[in-house]
Image (cartoon, rainbow, N blue to C red; front, side):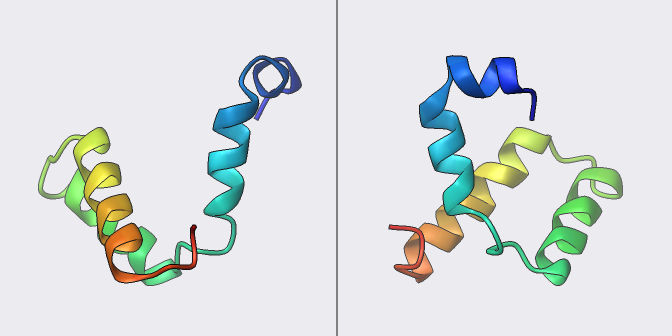
Length: 61
C-alpha cells in the first residue's frame, strides 16, 4: 500500500490490519477460483468472504 494512500485513509488501513494473518492459503485459492474460473466479480467474492469471516468468528472484532 502506498504511504500517500495510507495517510489519507487511516480507517482503510485499520480495517485491512484486522485481516492480517486471517486469510488462509486455501481461502485465497478458493477466492481466486471463484474469480478466475467461475467469473464472479472480485467485489462479490471479497464481500462474501468477509461476511463469512465476521459471521463465523469473533477474531476480527
